[in-house]
Length: 270
Image (tube, rainbow, N blue to C red; front, side):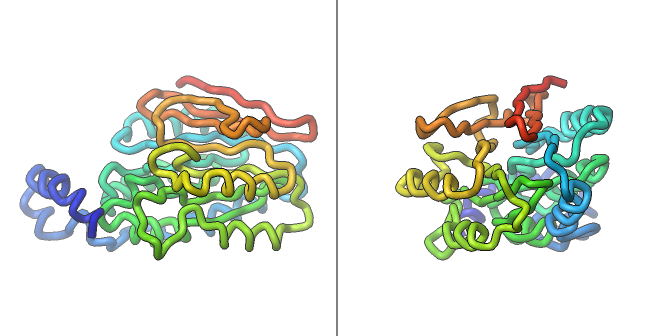
């Protein structure tokens, strides 16, 4: 209910800008997805297939593409031109208002990527009926996959958008994943939208969260969006870096290479 109230005025304003026939044909929050659905399962399967047996992977991260449709098209072209990526991760906030139409518009732009991508849910994606739309379009709010010998643990950390019926972050999911890791996993990366110590994160359990992620084998780093700028911090003072990706309007993305020598991190402007 609180999310619907928070976005009611925004939705009404959006309606007023739509042609009359569009208002009669559909509602921006109807969750009637048109086109491809369940993208997370499809794309994680593709990532695992194309990186199977590998000990070196390279991926890019974008985030907070809300309302940045032209910039998202530009970064897709830039990433495709590289020709050296295995996949792309999105740090959430695909949408500004959580509307089905925004999810569809973003999906249709990202569909032009030459490599598979995954996207975690952001706090703006949780507004109104956005959680339902995300589940239909992408899938579970928490998921994981293996790229080569690296486990990617992808989490909903938007605690402020949920009541106690949904845990964010979900320790049960994390512990279950930890107990059933594929034998090939030697390293781990954690992807989320809001990082510990942000206003979205449940900071009552921030220390416990970090202790749990550090139990995963060979934790390399954690990556997130939400803050709309680039940041690199050792948040807990133990050498594990947390890297923030800027929003797409800043026209940059993060590039990571992980291999037997460790990892490389780069901020790339486009």
